[in-house]
Image (cartoon, rainbow, N blue to C red):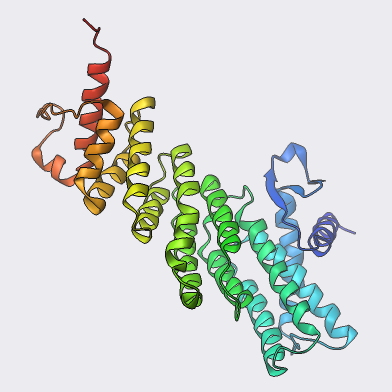
Amino acid sequence: MSTSDDVFQTLSEIFSTRNSQVLEIEILSPGFGPLLQDGRSIGITKKALVQAFAVARSIFFDLIGDSLDTSPHDEKSRSRVDDLLVSSEILLLFDCEHLTACNWRKKRLAALIQDQDSSNGNSPGYENLIQILESELTLMTTYLCSPLHRHTKSPTLWQHRSWVLTQTIRGRSPNQELFTTELTVVLRAGELHPKNYYAFSYIRQLHRALSEIGKETGDTFELLAQSAIHPTVSWCLAHPRDISGWMFVVYLMEAVPDREIHNDIINKVIRFALDVGWEGESLWTFIDLAVKTFGAETAQEAFRTSTDTIPTTPIQPSEFETGKAISEKPWRIWLARARDYWAKSQQPSL
């Protein structure tokens, strides 16, 4: 076999035998390849991936052009679907925006779901369908949580994950554990690709969807948000430059109308910023927005707790070029208060 065929066969075997496990795939430097595996950790060079992609693309488009039953019952059709599955996985590994590969996978799942619906969900195939959907979710987790260049912020992959998860939870009550699991995926993707708008948009949409499904069970909207708010704040304090994360915290605070929780969060964030000397825009933008949304007195209490005194030193024109700069970036006012605190704390005590 050629080198391209060798790499394709090895990668195909890895995907076809992963048994719903989440893999971690990364691109190797040329000197380490072409393909290495250590348990669930996979390394492949860009050259080897291109070679595997070329073979997978040829197989995929040769088969997709045929009239193919997406829920086959004979051995030949099953073999062809298996080839399409593994080749589409390699296509998406190389190009996360490969719509043809992604849409074929969705079409196959939709056909399986339709077959199951026609049997009123009573056939032995129901559990098998759930396993297939969960395997698709773990495949998306593999892409979204691996240190790959574009996958963690791929709108195509996030939309596909959202659709698959929607099919998985049809007819079920929302589950806080499910929401926590999805939040873990989102936060991991946020680590790999900072300011990951698509990831945090996904978790917002999921929160609303689960809340809608579970209306009859009570305050699901608030309870789900409350389960996520403290882990998300902790993540943001570890990644204080990430504005997408901070805006998700604001969203969760709006969903949890608890003044004590609001006070604790604002207090904790201000204490962190003052303790480490943080001057970055994203964190102070969060503070400014939280004050405007949840009340200025909350921030006054938090600042008093953090500094013992509320800084009142006026902002001097020399610090900002114009008054317009302050009005356009009100977070600078909070930064000026912090700088005032830092300056006072460095003064020798009498």
